[in-house]
Image (cartoon, rainbow, N blue to C red):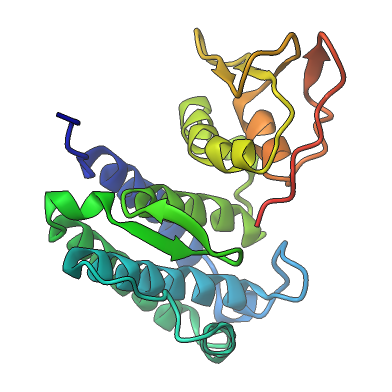
Length: 239
């Protein structure tokens, strides 16, 4: 009999990542909201609104899974974009309250999930990927952690603790394996006895955990990394 999924550990990680995000956001001014983020064409306000609306969308997916019904995270791509645009210009106080409310709803939805519902298969993402409901938690963790950096507000990937960077790396790697990432071993140099592999290969990529993660996600050039046994692979595009 398969072991039942327990969301407790990842829920705790999401709560901690959200707390770090909110520490950064609370230090921002209303003028900062209109400043540029690291995402082309988006202000910091767009990123904040996206983080909040993502929580709502993932809750919708989980609520459907709990009922055994497949739902869409958003009514449409246009509705998603309109909601982000509408929330982008709000003052920082409203942004904080919105993220707090979204987080509380998400954690509450996770806590209310029947244990059997975590195996329900969902479709989400721009490419309509099929994934188990349990993977929603990793998706939320990545959303909060990566977009915290995208705020361009003094918090960078190098601020990730090595263990946390490896956690994000582990959660993202299966998606890249499915997209055809060249087989290789990933060995962080700043954390002991961790090797991630996606198939048999003599190629090993080493470097700081955060640099391995940003390279895989297409957010870093790989300049801090060393490849042995072959060339540094080019990760597939993240969608």
